[in-house]
Amino acid sequence: MRVRRGTFPLAASRATLLRVTNGLKTPSALADLASRGLVRPAAGEPEPVYAFRHALIQEAAYASLTRQERRRLHREIGLVLEGRPRAAGADASLLARHFGEAGEVEKAVPYAIEAASHAVDVLAFDEALSLLEKVEGLTRDAERSDLRRSVLERRGDVYARMRLGTRAITVYREALDLGARPADPTADLHLNVKILRAAAAVRWAVDRAAYRAAFEATRASRRSLEQALPRLGAAPLVDRVHTFAALSLDAWRNIEPPDWPAAARYAERAAALAEESGDPVLNSIALEALGDAELGRGDLPAYRVSALRRLALLEHPAFVDRLQRADALRGAGAALMYLGRYEEALDLLRQAEASAEAIQAVDQQFNALSLACQCAFRLDRWDDVLALEARWTELERHAPSERTGPLCFPMALAAVVHELRGEVEMATRLRRRSYAIMLGMGAVESWRSNAHY
Amino acid sequence: MMGQAVRDPAKWGSGPSALDDLVLQIEVAELRRDATALESFARRLSDESAAMGHELYRALADRALGVALVWGGARQQAGACFERAAAHFAARHVGFQLGRAQLAWGRAARDSGDASAARWHLLAAIEAFDDVGAAPAAEAARRERAALG
View (cartoon, rainbow over the protein chains, first blue to last red):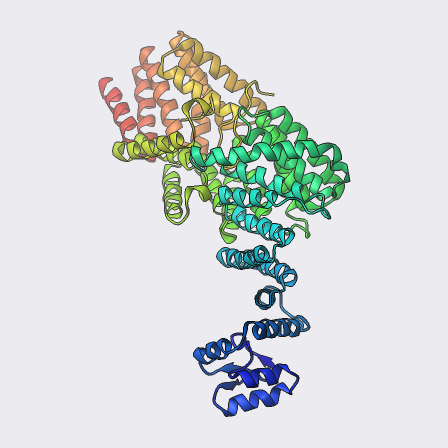
Protein backbone atom coordinates (compact mmCIF):
# COMPACT_ATOMS: atom_id res chain seq x y z
CA MET A 1 0.00 0.00 0.00
CA ARG A 2 1.18 3.51 -0.72
CA VAL A 3 0.01 6.94 0.13
CA ARG A 4 0.67 9.48 -2.54
CA ARG A 5 2.77 12.49 -1.71
CA GLY A 6 0.55 15.22 -0.39
CA THR A 7 -1.45 12.84 1.74
CA PHE A 8 0.89 12.80 4.71
CA PRO A 9 0.08 13.09 7.53
CA LEU A 10 -2.11 10.19 6.81
CA ALA A 11 -5.42 11.20 8.31
CA ALA A 12 -8.39 13.42 8.03
CA SER A 13 -9.37 13.31 11.63
CA ARG A 14 -7.28 13.29 14.72
CA ALA A 15 -8.79 10.08 16.06
CA THR A 16 -8.30 8.16 12.87
CA LEU A 17 -4.81 9.46 12.45
CA LEU A 18 -3.84 8.34 15.89
CA ARG A 19 -5.42 4.95 15.33
CA VAL A 20 -3.51 4.53 12.09
CA THR A 21 -0.20 5.34 13.65
CA ASN A 22 -0.87 3.49 16.85
CA GLY A 23 -0.68 0.15 15.13
CA LEU A 24 -4.16 -0.42 13.77
CA LYS A 25 -4.19 -1.90 10.32
CA THR A 26 -3.72 0.99 7.94
CA PRO A 27 -5.88 -0.41 5.11
CA SER A 28 -8.91 -0.57 7.38
CA ALA A 29 -8.29 2.93 8.67
CA LEU A 30 -7.98 4.24 5.16
CA ALA A 31 -11.12 2.43 4.13
CA ASP A 32 -12.84 4.13 7.05
CA LEU A 33 -11.63 7.53 5.83
CA ALA A 34 -12.67 6.71 2.29
CA SER A 35 -16.16 5.72 3.46
CA ARG A 36 -16.44 9.13 5.10
CA GLY A 37 -15.52 10.82 1.85
CA LEU A 38 -12.28 12.32 3.10
CA VAL A 39 -9.86 10.31 1.02
CA ARG A 40 -10.23 8.38 -2.18
CA PRO A 41 -8.35 5.44 -3.61
CA ALA A 42 -6.34 6.37 -6.67
CA ALA A 43 -6.63 3.83 -9.47
CA GLY A 44 -4.01 2.43 -11.78
CA GLU A 45 -1.22 1.88 -9.31
CA PRO A 46 0.43 -1.46 -8.56
CA GLU A 47 -0.49 -1.03 -4.90
CA PRO A 48 -3.28 0.89 -3.15
CA VAL A 49 -2.76 4.62 -3.15
CA TYR A 50 -4.97 7.09 -1.36
CA ALA A 51 -5.25 10.80 -1.84
CA PHE A 52 -7.11 13.48 0.06
CA ARG A 53 -10.24 14.60 -1.71
CA HIS A 54 -9.28 18.21 -1.11
CA ALA A 55 -6.18 20.02 0.04
CA LEU A 56 -8.24 21.81 2.69
CA ILE A 57 -9.10 18.46 4.28
CA GLN A 58 -5.42 17.69 4.53
CA GLU A 59 -4.71 21.11 6.01
CA ALA A 60 -7.55 20.76 8.53
CA ALA A 61 -6.34 17.32 9.57
CA TYR A 62 -2.82 18.56 9.98
CA ALA A 63 -3.92 21.59 11.96
CA SER A 64 -5.85 19.39 14.35
CA LEU A 65 -2.65 17.71 15.55
CA THR A 66 -0.49 18.92 18.39
CA ARG A 67 3.12 19.78 17.65
CA GLN A 68 4.30 16.65 19.41
CA GLU A 69 1.89 14.47 17.45
CA ARG A 70 3.00 16.01 14.20
CA ARG A 71 6.63 15.47 15.00
CA ARG A 72 5.99 11.86 15.95
CA LEU A 73 4.00 11.26 12.78
CA HIS A 74 6.62 12.85 10.57
CA ARG A 75 9.22 10.68 12.20
CA GLU A 76 7.10 7.54 11.73
CA ILE A 77 6.51 8.38 8.10
CA GLY A 78 10.17 9.14 7.60
CA LEU A 79 11.15 5.77 9.06
CA VAL A 80 8.61 3.95 6.87
CA LEU A 81 9.88 5.74 3.78
CA GLU A 82 13.44 5.10 4.78
CA GLY A 83 12.79 1.37 4.86
CA ARG A 84 11.42 1.34 1.33
CA PRO A 85 13.41 1.03 -1.86
CA ARG A 86 13.60 4.51 -3.30
CA ALA A 87 14.55 6.45 -6.33
CA ALA A 88 17.26 8.98 -5.58
CA GLY A 89 16.40 12.64 -5.36
CA ALA A 90 12.67 12.97 -4.97
CA ASP A 91 12.49 10.58 -2.03
CA ALA A 92 15.50 12.18 -0.39
CA SER A 93 13.63 15.46 -0.54
CA LEU A 94 10.57 13.86 1.09
CA LEU A 95 12.71 12.22 3.75
CA ALA A 96 14.45 15.53 4.46
CA ARG A 97 11.08 17.17 4.85
CA HIS A 98 9.66 14.56 7.20
CA PHE A 99 12.75 14.24 9.35
CA GLY A 100 13.03 18.01 9.35
CA GLU A 101 9.45 18.41 10.55
CA ALA A 102 10.15 15.70 13.12
CA GLY A 103 13.09 17.75 14.39
CA GLU A 104 15.51 14.94 13.53
CA VAL A 105 18.22 17.22 12.26
CA GLU A 106 20.89 14.51 11.99
CA LYS A 107 18.71 12.62 9.57
CA ALA A 108 17.19 15.61 7.78
CA VAL A 109 20.51 17.22 6.84
CA PRO A 110 22.08 14.32 4.87
CA TYR A 111 18.81 13.77 3.03
CA ALA A 112 18.49 17.48 2.25
CA ILE A 113 22.07 17.53 0.98
CA GLU A 114 21.40 14.46 -1.16
CA ALA A 115 18.18 15.96 -2.52
CA ALA A 116 19.90 19.28 -3.21
CA SER A 117 22.66 17.47 -5.07
CA HIS A 118 20.10 15.75 -7.28
CA ALA A 119 18.27 19.04 -7.79
CA VAL A 120 21.53 20.58 -9.03
CA ASP A 121 22.04 17.63 -11.36
CA VAL A 122 18.73 18.41 -13.02
CA LEU A 123 19.52 22.14 -12.94
CA ALA A 124 16.83 22.93 -10.36
CA PHE A 125 19.10 25.38 -8.54
CA ASP A 126 16.33 27.27 -6.75
CA GLU A 127 14.90 24.04 -5.42
CA ALA A 128 18.33 23.02 -4.15
CA LEU A 129 18.74 26.33 -2.35
CA SER A 130 15.26 26.12 -0.87
CA LEU A 131 15.92 22.63 0.51
CA LEU A 132 19.20 23.68 2.04
CA GLU A 133 17.85 26.90 3.50
CA LYS A 134 15.11 24.97 5.28
CA VAL A 135 17.45 22.51 6.96
CA GLU A 136 19.92 25.26 7.72
CA GLY A 137 17.23 26.87 9.87
CA LEU A 138 16.83 23.59 11.72
CA THR A 139 20.54 23.26 12.37
CA ARG A 140 20.56 26.78 13.78
CA ASP A 141 17.65 26.03 16.08
CA ALA A 142 19.26 22.78 17.17
CA GLU A 143 22.59 24.56 17.70
CA ARG A 144 24.30 21.99 15.55
CA SER A 145 27.13 24.04 14.11
CA ASP A 146 28.75 20.93 12.59
CA LEU A 147 25.65 20.17 10.54
CA ARG A 148 25.05 23.82 9.78
CA ARG A 149 28.55 24.05 8.39
CA SER A 150 27.86 21.17 6.00
CA VAL A 151 24.65 22.80 4.84
CA LEU A 152 26.32 26.17 4.36
CA GLU A 153 29.08 24.56 2.34
CA ARG A 154 26.52 22.92 0.06
CA ARG A 155 24.62 26.18 -0.28
CA GLY A 156 27.86 27.83 -1.30
CA ASP A 157 28.41 25.04 -3.82
CA VAL A 158 25.03 25.75 -5.40
CA TYR A 159 25.81 29.47 -5.67
CA ALA A 160 29.22 28.65 -7.11
CA ARG A 161 27.63 26.31 -9.62
CA MET A 162 25.28 29.15 -10.59
CA ARG A 163 28.38 31.34 -10.91
CA LEU A 164 27.11 33.66 -8.20
CA GLY A 165 30.57 33.78 -6.72
CA THR A 166 30.17 36.64 -4.28
CA ARG A 167 27.22 34.92 -2.59
CA ALA A 168 29.12 31.64 -2.57
CA ILE A 169 32.06 33.30 -0.83
CA THR A 170 29.80 34.89 1.80
CA VAL A 171 28.29 31.52 2.63
CA TYR A 172 31.64 29.70 2.63
CA ARG A 173 33.05 32.35 4.98
CA GLU A 174 30.05 31.90 7.25
CA ALA A 175 30.76 28.17 7.32
CA LEU A 176 34.43 28.76 8.15
CA ASP A 177 33.47 31.10 10.97
CA LEU A 178 31.57 28.26 12.61
CA GLY A 179 34.88 26.51 13.26
CA ALA A 180 36.26 23.24 11.96
CA ARG A 181 34.86 19.84 12.79
CA PRO A 182 37.46 18.05 14.87
CA ALA A 183 36.73 14.78 13.08
CA ASP A 184 37.41 16.26 9.66
CA PRO A 185 40.81 17.93 9.39
CA THR A 186 40.30 18.66 5.69
CA ALA A 187 37.06 20.60 6.19
CA ASP A 188 38.77 23.99 6.18
CA LEU A 189 40.83 22.92 3.20
CA HIS A 190 37.72 22.34 1.11
CA LEU A 191 36.16 25.66 2.04
CA ASN A 192 39.31 27.66 1.41
CA VAL A 193 39.83 25.98 -1.96
CA LYS A 194 36.26 26.83 -2.88
CA ILE A 195 36.68 30.45 -1.81
CA LEU A 196 39.76 30.88 -4.02
CA ARG A 197 37.91 29.35 -6.97
CA ALA A 198 34.78 31.42 -6.45
CA ALA A 199 36.82 34.62 -6.20
CA ALA A 200 38.71 33.71 -9.38
CA ALA A 201 35.41 33.19 -11.17
CA VAL A 202 34.12 36.65 -10.32
CA ARG A 203 37.35 38.44 -11.23
CA TRP A 204 36.41 40.90 -13.98
CA ALA A 205 32.77 39.74 -13.77
CA VAL A 206 31.61 41.99 -10.93
CA ASP A 207 32.19 45.61 -10.13
CA ARG A 208 35.13 46.79 -8.12
CA ALA A 209 33.28 47.04 -4.81
CA ALA A 210 31.94 43.49 -5.05
CA TYR A 211 35.31 42.14 -6.08
CA ARG A 212 37.04 43.91 -3.19
CA ALA A 213 35.01 41.85 -0.72
CA ALA A 214 35.82 38.67 -2.62
CA PHE A 215 39.47 39.66 -2.78
CA GLU A 216 39.60 40.19 0.99
CA ALA A 217 38.22 36.69 1.48
CA THR A 218 40.95 35.24 -0.71
CA ARG A 219 43.70 36.60 1.53
CA ALA A 220 42.60 34.61 4.55
CA SER A 221 41.98 31.49 2.47
CA ARG A 222 45.32 31.74 0.71
CA ARG A 223 47.13 32.17 4.01
CA SER A 224 45.27 29.23 5.52
CA LEU A 225 46.08 26.95 2.57
CA GLU A 226 49.72 27.99 2.50
CA GLN A 227 49.98 27.24 6.20
CA ALA A 228 48.36 23.84 5.60
CA LEU A 229 50.87 22.87 2.88
CA PRO A 230 53.44 21.25 5.20
CA ARG A 231 50.69 18.94 6.51
CA LEU A 232 49.02 18.40 3.17
CA GLY A 233 50.69 15.02 2.65
CA ALA A 234 48.30 13.56 5.21
CA ALA A 235 45.25 14.69 3.24
CA PRO A 236 43.60 12.44 0.66
CA LEU A 237 45.07 12.65 -2.84
CA VAL A 238 41.94 14.24 -4.24
CA ASP A 239 42.18 17.09 -1.73
CA ARG A 240 45.82 17.63 -2.52
CA VAL A 241 45.11 17.92 -6.24
CA HIS A 242 42.27 20.37 -5.62
CA THR A 243 44.41 22.42 -3.27
CA PHE A 244 47.38 22.76 -5.62
CA ALA A 245 45.12 23.46 -8.60
CA ALA A 246 43.24 26.16 -6.67
CA LEU A 247 46.49 27.75 -5.45
CA SER A 248 47.75 27.77 -9.02
CA LEU A 249 44.61 29.50 -10.25
CA ASP A 250 44.74 31.93 -7.35
CA ALA A 251 48.34 32.86 -8.09
CA TRP A 252 47.53 34.37 -11.46
CA ARG A 253 43.88 35.15 -11.21
CA ASN A 254 43.44 36.69 -7.76
CA ILE A 255 46.89 38.15 -7.23
CA GLU A 256 47.90 41.42 -8.84
CA PRO A 257 50.29 41.32 -10.64
CA PRO A 258 49.94 37.61 -11.47
CA ASP A 259 52.56 35.34 -9.91
CA TRP A 260 53.13 33.07 -12.90
CA PRO A 261 56.07 31.12 -11.43
CA ALA A 262 53.92 30.19 -8.42
CA ALA A 263 51.03 29.29 -10.72
CA ALA A 264 53.32 26.97 -12.68
CA ARG A 265 54.84 25.44 -9.55
CA TYR A 266 51.48 24.61 -7.99
CA ALA A 267 50.05 23.37 -11.30
CA GLU A 268 52.96 20.99 -11.77
CA ARG A 269 52.38 19.57 -8.29
CA ALA A 270 48.69 19.13 -9.04
CA ALA A 271 49.43 17.46 -12.37
CA ALA A 272 51.92 15.02 -10.86
CA LEU A 273 49.49 14.01 -8.11
CA ALA A 274 46.55 13.71 -10.50
CA GLU A 275 48.54 11.44 -12.75
CA GLU A 276 49.27 9.26 -9.76
CA SER A 277 45.52 9.01 -9.07
CA GLY A 278 44.57 7.84 -12.55
CA ASP A 279 41.27 9.67 -12.13
CA PRO A 280 40.34 11.38 -15.42
CA VAL A 281 38.41 14.22 -13.82
CA LEU A 282 41.22 15.00 -11.38
CA ASN A 283 43.63 14.91 -14.30
CA SER A 284 41.40 17.32 -16.17
CA ILE A 285 41.41 19.74 -13.22
CA ALA A 286 45.19 19.56 -12.95
CA LEU A 287 45.75 19.90 -16.71
CA GLU A 288 43.52 22.95 -16.73
CA ALA A 289 45.80 24.55 -14.14
CA LEU A 290 48.91 23.44 -16.02
CA GLY A 291 47.59 24.77 -19.32
CA ASP A 292 46.75 28.15 -17.82
CA ALA A 293 50.25 28.42 -16.38
CA GLU A 294 51.81 27.49 -19.73
CA LEU A 295 49.65 29.99 -21.54
CA GLY A 296 50.63 32.55 -18.94
CA ARG A 297 54.29 31.95 -19.77
CA GLY A 298 53.43 32.43 -23.43
CA ASP A 299 54.31 28.83 -24.17
CA LEU A 300 51.53 28.18 -26.67
CA PRO A 301 52.83 24.81 -27.92
CA ALA A 302 52.97 23.45 -24.36
CA TYR A 303 49.51 24.85 -23.69
CA ARG A 304 48.24 23.10 -26.79
CA VAL A 305 49.69 19.78 -25.62
CA SER A 306 48.08 20.11 -22.18
CA ALA A 307 44.75 21.20 -23.64
CA LEU A 308 44.66 18.29 -26.09
CA ARG A 309 45.70 15.81 -23.39
CA ARG A 310 42.80 17.12 -21.35
CA LEU A 311 40.47 16.82 -24.31
CA ALA A 312 41.49 13.17 -24.78
CA LEU A 313 40.38 12.45 -21.20
CA LEU A 314 36.77 13.00 -22.26
CA GLU A 315 36.89 9.59 -23.95
CA HIS A 316 37.44 7.93 -20.59
CA PRO A 317 34.27 6.11 -19.43
CA ALA A 318 34.77 7.43 -15.90
CA PHE A 319 34.73 11.05 -17.05
CA VAL A 320 31.40 12.09 -15.60
CA ASP A 321 31.90 15.76 -14.68
CA ARG A 322 29.85 17.79 -17.15
CA LEU A 323 31.35 21.12 -16.14
CA GLN A 324 34.85 19.80 -16.68
CA ARG A 325 33.72 18.38 -20.01
CA ALA A 326 32.52 21.76 -21.23
CA ASP A 327 35.66 23.43 -19.94
CA ALA A 328 37.99 20.87 -21.53
CA LEU A 329 36.31 21.47 -24.89
CA ARG A 330 36.61 25.23 -24.41
CA GLY A 331 40.25 24.95 -23.36
CA ALA A 332 41.18 22.89 -26.41
CA GLY A 333 39.28 25.32 -28.63
CA ALA A 334 41.18 28.23 -27.09
CA ALA A 335 44.54 26.49 -27.53
CA LEU A 336 43.90 25.88 -31.22
CA MET A 337 42.61 29.41 -31.67
CA TYR A 338 45.81 30.86 -30.24
CA LEU A 339 47.76 28.82 -32.78
CA GLY A 340 45.63 30.03 -35.66
CA ARG A 341 43.85 26.72 -36.24
CA TYR A 342 40.54 28.49 -36.33
CA GLU A 343 38.38 25.90 -38.11
CA GLU A 344 39.29 23.17 -35.64
CA ALA A 345 38.88 25.63 -32.80
CA LEU A 346 35.41 26.63 -33.97
CA ASP A 347 34.33 23.00 -34.10
CA LEU A 348 35.42 22.43 -30.48
CA LEU A 349 33.94 25.72 -29.34
CA ARG A 350 30.58 24.81 -30.83
CA GLN A 351 30.69 21.58 -28.83
CA ALA A 352 31.75 23.48 -25.72
CA GLU A 353 28.87 25.89 -26.07
CA ALA A 354 26.36 23.08 -26.55
CA SER A 355 27.74 21.20 -23.53
CA ALA A 356 27.60 24.34 -21.41
CA GLU A 357 24.10 25.19 -22.54
CA ALA A 358 22.89 21.70 -21.63
CA ILE A 359 23.97 22.21 -18.02
CA GLN A 360 23.12 25.91 -17.81
CA ALA A 361 26.76 26.81 -17.27
CA VAL A 362 26.17 30.32 -18.51
CA ASP A 363 29.73 31.51 -18.03
CA GLN A 364 31.11 28.62 -20.05
CA GLN A 365 28.56 29.28 -22.74
CA PHE A 366 29.65 32.92 -22.96
CA ASN A 367 33.31 31.95 -22.92
CA ALA A 368 32.81 29.60 -25.83
CA LEU A 369 30.86 32.26 -27.71
CA SER A 370 33.51 34.83 -26.97
CA LEU A 371 36.32 32.63 -28.28
CA ALA A 372 34.28 31.66 -31.34
CA CYS A 373 33.75 35.35 -31.93
CA GLN A 374 37.50 35.89 -31.85
CA CYS A 375 38.01 33.08 -34.39
CA ALA A 376 35.34 34.50 -36.69
CA PHE A 377 36.88 37.95 -36.35
CA ARG A 378 40.32 36.72 -37.35
CA LEU A 379 38.86 34.90 -40.35
CA ASP A 380 37.03 38.08 -41.40
CA ARG A 381 33.73 36.27 -41.09
CA TRP A 382 31.95 39.37 -40.05
CA ASP A 383 28.44 38.03 -40.46
CA ASP A 384 29.38 35.27 -38.00
CA VAL A 385 30.78 37.81 -35.55
CA LEU A 386 27.50 39.74 -35.63
CA ALA A 387 25.42 36.56 -35.39
CA LEU A 388 27.40 35.58 -32.29
CA GLU A 389 26.90 39.07 -30.92
CA ALA A 390 23.13 38.62 -31.36
CA ARG A 391 23.33 35.32 -29.47
CA TRP A 392 25.12 36.72 -26.45
CA THR A 393 22.92 39.81 -26.43
CA GLU A 394 19.93 37.49 -26.16
CA LEU A 395 21.56 35.42 -23.41
CA GLU A 396 22.61 38.56 -21.58
CA ARG A 397 18.94 39.43 -21.08
CA HIS A 398 18.50 36.34 -18.92
CA ALA A 399 21.69 36.31 -16.90
CA PRO A 400 23.45 38.88 -14.72
CA SER A 401 27.00 39.78 -15.68
CA GLU A 402 28.30 37.97 -12.59
CA ARG A 403 27.14 34.76 -14.24
CA THR A 404 28.23 35.57 -17.77
CA GLY A 405 31.62 37.06 -17.07
CA PRO A 406 32.81 40.24 -18.75
CA LEU A 407 31.57 40.73 -22.29
CA CYS A 408 33.66 43.75 -23.20
CA PHE A 409 36.01 41.80 -25.45
CA PRO A 410 33.51 40.27 -27.91
CA MET A 411 31.56 43.49 -27.73
CA ALA A 412 34.64 45.39 -28.86
CA LEU A 413 35.19 42.93 -31.71
CA ALA A 414 31.62 43.49 -32.88
CA ALA A 415 32.21 47.25 -32.62
CA VAL A 416 35.20 46.89 -34.95
CA VAL A 417 33.10 44.99 -37.48
CA HIS A 418 30.38 47.64 -37.43
CA GLU A 419 33.02 50.35 -37.78
CA LEU A 420 34.66 48.66 -40.76
CA ARG A 421 31.27 48.30 -42.38
CA GLY A 422 30.59 51.98 -41.95
CA GLU A 423 27.89 51.45 -39.30
CA VAL A 424 29.36 54.13 -37.12
CA GLU A 425 26.48 54.67 -34.74
CA MET A 426 26.25 51.01 -33.79
CA ALA A 427 30.03 50.78 -33.51
CA THR A 428 30.13 53.77 -31.19
CA ARG A 429 27.38 52.37 -29.00
CA LEU A 430 29.12 49.00 -28.60
CA ARG A 431 32.52 50.57 -28.08
CA ARG A 432 31.16 52.77 -25.31
CA ARG A 433 29.43 49.86 -23.63
CA SER A 434 32.61 47.80 -23.84
CA TYR A 435 34.63 50.64 -22.36
CA ALA A 436 32.08 51.18 -19.58
CA ILE A 437 32.34 47.50 -18.62
CA MET A 438 36.10 47.81 -18.44
CA LEU A 439 35.86 50.92 -16.28
CA GLY A 440 33.41 49.15 -13.99
CA MET A 441 35.72 46.19 -13.55
CA GLY A 442 38.78 48.01 -12.38
CA ALA A 443 40.86 51.13 -12.41
CA VAL A 444 42.66 51.88 -15.65
CA GLU A 445 46.04 51.18 -14.07
CA SER A 446 44.94 47.62 -13.29
CA TRP A 447 44.06 46.82 -16.90
CA ARG A 448 46.26 44.32 -18.60
CA SER A 449 48.99 46.19 -20.42
CA ASN A 450 48.54 44.20 -23.61
CA ALA A 451 44.75 44.16 -23.71
CA HIS A 452 43.54 44.45 -27.26
CA TYR A 453 41.18 47.33 -27.08
CA MET B 1 59.48 30.69 -26.18
CA MET B 2 58.10 34.14 -26.72
CA GLY B 3 59.36 37.14 -24.88
CA GLN B 4 56.06 38.33 -23.56
CA ALA B 5 53.63 36.28 -21.57
CA VAL B 6 49.90 36.18 -21.93
CA ARG B 7 48.75 38.29 -19.03
CA ASP B 8 45.30 36.84 -18.60
CA PRO B 9 44.57 33.54 -20.29
CA ALA B 10 41.45 32.86 -22.23
CA LYS B 11 39.52 31.48 -19.30
CA TRP B 12 36.54 33.73 -18.53
CA GLY B 13 37.28 35.87 -21.53
CA SER B 14 39.67 36.00 -24.37
CA GLY B 15 42.99 37.36 -23.30
CA PRO B 16 45.39 38.21 -26.07
CA SER B 17 48.46 36.06 -26.60
CA ALA B 18 51.90 37.49 -27.20
CA LEU B 19 51.33 36.94 -30.94
CA ASP B 20 48.06 38.87 -30.70
CA ASP B 21 49.98 41.61 -28.99
CA LEU B 22 52.42 41.85 -31.90
CA VAL B 23 49.52 42.08 -34.33
CA LEU B 24 48.24 45.05 -32.35
CA GLN B 25 51.68 46.67 -32.25
CA ILE B 26 51.85 46.35 -36.01
CA GLU B 27 48.52 48.14 -36.42
CA VAL B 28 49.66 50.96 -34.17
CA ALA B 29 53.02 51.33 -35.93
CA GLU B 30 51.29 51.44 -39.31
CA LEU B 31 48.81 54.07 -38.16
CA ARG B 32 51.74 56.14 -36.86
CA ARG B 33 53.63 55.54 -40.11
CA ASP B 34 56.60 54.41 -38.02
CA ALA B 35 58.54 52.37 -40.59
CA THR B 36 61.21 51.21 -38.16
CA ALA B 37 58.74 49.91 -35.59
CA LEU B 38 56.54 48.40 -38.27
CA GLU B 39 59.41 46.44 -39.79
CA SER B 40 60.65 45.32 -36.41
CA PHE B 41 57.25 44.09 -35.21
CA ALA B 42 56.47 42.51 -38.57
CA ARG B 43 59.73 40.54 -38.57
CA ARG B 44 59.13 39.39 -35.01
CA LEU B 45 55.61 38.33 -35.83
CA SER B 46 56.85 36.54 -38.92
CA ASP B 47 59.49 34.59 -36.98
CA GLU B 48 57.31 33.78 -34.00
CA SER B 49 54.22 32.85 -35.97
CA ALA B 50 56.36 30.59 -38.19
CA ALA B 51 57.72 28.91 -35.06
CA MET B 52 54.18 28.39 -33.78
CA GLY B 53 52.76 27.31 -37.13
CA HIS B 54 50.33 30.24 -37.06
CA GLU B 55 49.82 30.69 -40.80
CA LEU B 56 47.32 33.53 -40.66
CA TYR B 57 49.57 35.67 -38.48
CA ARG B 58 52.49 34.90 -40.76
CA ALA B 59 50.44 36.27 -43.63
CA LEU B 60 49.57 39.34 -41.56
CA ALA B 61 53.29 39.77 -40.90
CA ASP B 62 54.02 39.47 -44.63
CA ARG B 63 51.57 42.22 -45.49
CA ALA B 64 52.92 44.52 -42.78
CA LEU B 65 56.51 43.79 -43.76
CA GLY B 66 55.60 44.62 -47.36
CA VAL B 67 54.28 48.00 -46.27
CA ALA B 68 57.42 48.68 -44.22
CA LEU B 69 59.64 47.71 -47.17
CA VAL B 70 57.70 50.01 -49.50
CA TRP B 71 58.19 52.85 -47.03
CA GLY B 72 61.89 52.00 -47.00
CA GLY B 73 62.05 51.98 -50.82
CA ALA B 74 62.51 48.19 -51.22
CA ARG B 75 59.50 47.74 -53.54
CA GLN B 76 60.80 44.58 -55.20
CA GLN B 77 61.00 42.69 -51.93
CA ALA B 78 57.70 44.19 -50.86
CA GLY B 79 55.95 42.68 -53.88
CA ALA B 80 57.00 39.19 -52.80
CA CYS B 81 55.63 39.83 -49.31
CA PHE B 82 52.31 41.06 -50.67
CA GLU B 83 52.09 38.10 -52.99
CA ARG B 84 52.58 35.59 -50.16
CA ALA B 85 50.08 37.38 -47.95
CA ALA B 86 47.43 37.72 -50.66
CA ALA B 87 47.80 34.07 -51.65
CA HIS B 88 47.18 32.95 -48.08
CA PHE B 89 44.23 35.25 -47.51
CA ALA B 90 42.65 34.32 -50.84
CA ALA B 91 43.02 30.60 -50.20
CA ARG B 92 41.42 30.94 -46.76
CA HIS B 93 38.79 33.48 -47.82
CA VAL B 94 39.99 36.01 -45.27
CA GLY B 95 38.33 38.82 -47.17
CA PHE B 96 39.23 42.01 -45.36
CA GLN B 97 42.89 41.09 -44.97
CA LEU B 98 42.98 40.10 -48.64
CA GLY B 99 41.62 43.54 -49.48
CA ARG B 100 44.29 45.19 -47.33
CA ALA B 101 47.07 43.17 -48.96
CA GLN B 102 45.83 43.96 -52.46
CA LEU B 103 45.38 47.63 -51.59
CA ALA B 104 48.93 47.91 -50.26
CA TRP B 105 50.24 46.03 -53.30
CA GLY B 106 48.30 48.31 -55.63
CA ARG B 107 49.66 51.41 -53.93
CA ALA B 108 53.19 50.05 -54.20
CA ALA B 109 52.67 49.38 -57.92
CA ARG B 110 51.22 52.85 -58.41
CA ASP B 111 54.14 54.50 -56.60
CA SER B 112 56.60 52.59 -58.76
CA GLY B 113 54.82 53.82 -61.88
CA ASP B 114 53.12 50.57 -62.87
CA ALA B 115 49.58 51.93 -63.34
CA SER B 116 48.30 48.79 -65.01
CA ALA B 117 49.33 46.54 -62.14
CA ALA B 118 48.07 49.13 -59.68
CA ARG B 119 44.63 49.13 -61.30
CA TRP B 120 44.51 45.37 -61.22
CA HIS B 121 45.43 45.12 -57.52
CA LEU B 122 43.10 47.95 -56.54
CA LEU B 123 40.25 46.22 -58.33
CA ALA B 124 41.03 43.01 -56.44
CA ALA B 125 41.02 45.03 -53.22
CA ILE B 126 37.64 46.57 -54.03
CA GLU B 127 36.16 43.15 -54.74
CA ALA B 128 37.52 41.71 -51.50
CA PHE B 129 36.24 44.64 -49.45
CA ASP B 130 32.84 44.43 -51.13
CA ASP B 131 32.63 40.71 -50.34
CA VAL B 132 32.87 41.32 -46.61
CA GLY B 133 30.79 44.50 -46.67
CA ALA B 134 33.70 46.80 -45.78
CA ALA B 135 32.02 49.77 -47.42
CA PRO B 136 34.34 52.58 -46.28
CA ALA B 137 37.49 50.65 -47.31
CA ALA B 138 35.94 49.69 -50.66
CA GLU B 139 34.99 53.29 -51.29
CA ALA B 140 38.50 54.51 -50.50
CA ALA B 141 40.00 51.91 -52.86
CA ARG B 142 37.54 52.97 -55.59
CA ARG B 143 38.65 56.56 -55.26
CA GLU B 144 42.32 55.54 -55.51
CA ARG B 145 41.58 53.45 -58.58
CA ALA B 146 39.58 56.26 -60.20
CA ALA B 147 42.48 58.63 -59.59
CA LEU B 148 44.66 56.39 -61.74
CA GLY B 149 42.43 57.15 -64.68
